[in-house]
Image (cartoon, rainbow, N blue to C red; front, side, top):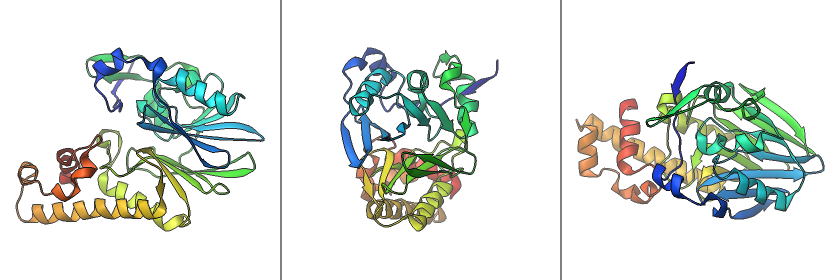
Length: 290
């Protein structure tokens, strides 16, 4: 069977994962619009739930280890089975919960998610078998899709080549909520998975497309970090562009990536490196594309 390298973004050491009591994992729940809740799994990964007359729709599934707790919190809000589960991209901190949630939901994703989850995954020295059939997406979006559900026409859009080749964003027009997955690490340097089709320059272009397309009052939910307003998103995007310009100038002046790290050319954005992607890792991400 074909084997692929798969990035598991769990934002914590593997030993901590194995030792953690996932039955006690914290999942703060916030209603961000009528019928729309954000469930912040392990205070790290955002899951969005939309429920109404037709039933329950969930965007992203977080970790496999937290799926029981996640479903418990979902059931507290609405006890009906999940009708649809949308995966914004392929990473394990957004698709791991498919193993449980997919038993009752139709899973919607870009075809690249099916490709990844259908194959063996290498996580360090471990080889993980393909996900079971019920956990693999069955409905695919490689451009745009309108899904009528709960009185909404939910707009699902593929924005390729930013975080991964298969990023989807999900917009609830009546609720005024946009779910961006990992095209938004709210307040932090983003992870760009170059090995799975990501490109930091395209990432910035895709965020610019969002800023140009959606209303000013839109509530924006990223894969990680706090809920943003469009003004917050605009400021975050500008700060990332500022780091790009600083690094472009440094490279034009002959600095290598290692010299940029030593000189801390991004020290003014130190706080943005406090989550997963540090200043140094953001330099490593951008440098080859300058």
